[in-house]
Image (tube, rainbow, N blue to C red):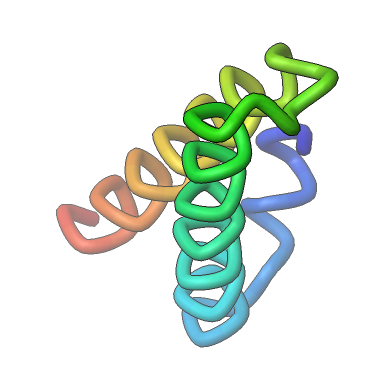
Length: 63
């Protein structure tokens, strides 16, 4: 997910996306532990998306 896409979202949409990504990361970690995860890069991308959203939320709080 690109930062421009995140910035175009409303605050509520960002919060909802953050919750979805956290749930997705939980599922990916679980799959990784039991050996079903084929694409481990997906976990890294999800972590980065979470960080991007948290950063943009924090920026908007400070401004």
